[in-house]
Amino acid sequence: MNLEPSPSASNSHELAMNTRNQDLKTCLKVVQEALLDVKAKDILELDVSSISNVADAIVIASGTSTRHVKALADNVAEEARKAGFRPIGVEGERDAEWILIDLGFVVVHVMLPTARKFYDLESLWRVSPESVA
Image 1 (cartoon, rainbow, N blue to C red):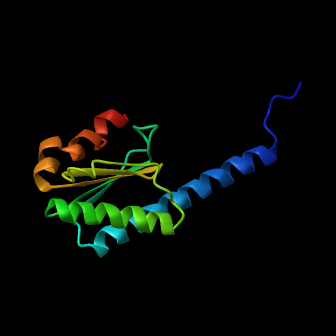
Image 2: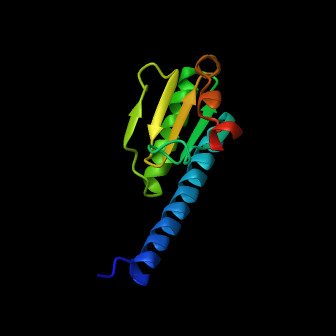
């Protein structure tokens, strides 16, 4: 019995990975542009693919007021939809101090600076050299 994968199975896996990587890059570009379009502050992109099975990337950005945070989140969700990335969920819109937009392999956090400093997601999700080894 031959248990080795066929060459076509290997190629299809590589193709799927390349497509996923391209989708990730495209989604991140859409998110970045949507945030910049509405003047987000301190945009940070984190690759969490090696430490999370929920998302490949996290984007964190700040808004200057609850109204600004809401506008940023709305623009990210709208531009993502236009580009074919349907948000799985949006949380925190009512208070608008911290809004999370789940785009599948990209999770976007739009926060007021006080909430961002308090929760310190950058430290929580940053991959340290010790954890990789």
